[in-house]
Length: 171
Picture 1 (cartoon, rainbow, N blue to C red):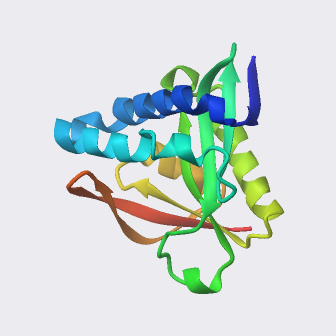
Picture 2: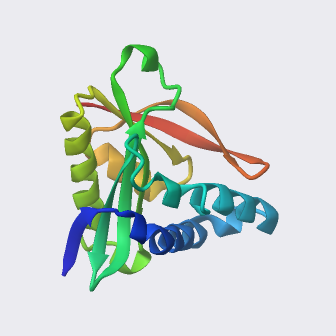
């Protein structure tokens, strides 16, 4: 049975390992080992995701199955340069990852519902995210919720720059 709760500092290592695994399973073939290692360390190393647990700027929600993390969503202050970003009161969905073993179990929708509700609770009028241009499954998922593609975003993975799509949802 999937349970949902907020992350606590003690979750840092397991959460980082889960996030590394999801990113690697989905995208590792796109990058050199050096660029992948550089990204994983920056995003999920000690100064990355684990350090954001408990940071008041970020909120991280976990999905667990039998006590193990199988998904998470992280929201925080918007840093994406989407059109009208300066005029919006936006929250950014930094990550929404679900372990492949739990695709189709409703974890992704539950976490996105939480992110939308939390952003509204913070008084945001926009939820923004970026998604890899060729991650068609994720793009379709966000489009079903009403997210709209508003432009290109250059996303660095080590020394490699990928094209992401900026997507926003009016709340």
